[in-house]
Image 1 (cartoon, rainbow, N blue to C red):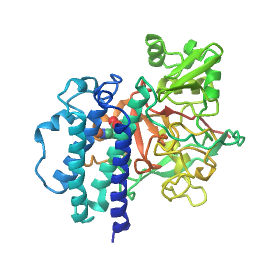
Image 2 (cartoon, helix red, strand yellow; image 1 turned 90 degrees about the vertical axis):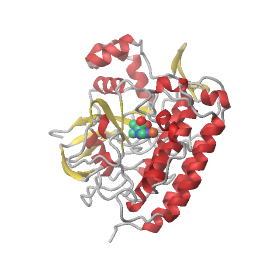
Image 3 (cartoon, rainbow, N blue to C red; image 1 turned 135 degrees about the vertical axis):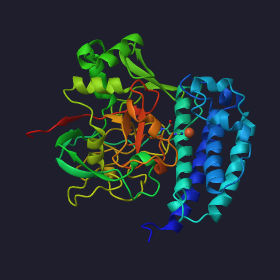
Image 4 (cartoon, rainbow, N blue to C red; image 1 turned 120 degrees about the vertical axis):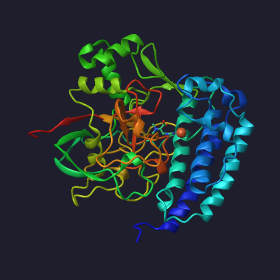
Length: 437
Ligand code: AVJ
Ligand code: FE
């Protein structure tokens, strides 16, 4: 007997595919053709590449792998293979022009919805619990976040609008909480649409530690800058120090000093840096240096997940900090409802049993850990989702940003990037060991 409700998952698959396509349309209809085909940064693809890549992945997994159909346009597969062409080269490829890319993605979608209707959610690894449909919806949402990063890098006037998060009174709870030592369950073997790197569930021993109740704010980060943090090699790893020297980095990406204050550009609008907001657009080296300056360190990935999922009352690991319920707007800042993180201390309904806030949503949180497989890892359904990235070059980020959709966000979800990356919606919180506390 399956441990899930197949009909509920079928409805969820349909709803999340539709929601992902609405977001893709929002991100690609708000600018004109030249803006879609231009490369706004060598770090990013032209938006029109993401658009057709979304359709091409959906074709490969839902139409070909699940339904056994022939390729619609076999000649375009290689154009949209992320491993064949690095991002910097993509604008020179003979990409489908915007209208053709839209038509292709819509054509694939029409057929994919037919496949969804006729596919049993039992019987094969790929379709069990509707996995392939959930994977494709997550893939589109991941590229929607990537396209939002492209929007942030794009020069020119504002193209996107969204209401700001609700203002909240300044957070005056404890600055850190103690997470007790001992084993906890990390990862999952039961979450139907969890990706391969989140599996399997396994016991992990974690020593007692203290972790920040909120992400590090712009105000706190400004104190690090004002204290000469970027000029003092004591706080930096040798690689981090070399990196900020070579690239003349002295503040988060998109920040600019104007007389006595810090300004930043956000989606085409310049504003004063809000002190109560979690800092975003910092690289791993910056997060690591700040933590050392503060007499602390980044949490390991296991520590982060224990803080997010461990319920001391039951000893169980929950799906999210607030329990097992899917994320609602009261729990977390997800899904591009807002175009910025919410002030530190927001979403009390989303806090963990130990009182840690904003673990999910707002900003991706750098951890101390390299991306590595869990014991018993099995690459599924393709090695290039996770396995080829395992190793010391990539640092793990947890929790998801304001730009992540709920379908691509869980207490177990793992993201990763190079330690120099900061165009992503990356922030952090700090921790310290609690031996003897
Ligand atoms: C897991 C977010 C690092 O965006 O490069 C998208 C997700 N994999 N297409 C990325 C992904 C293939 C991936 N990250
Ligand atoms: Fe992709």
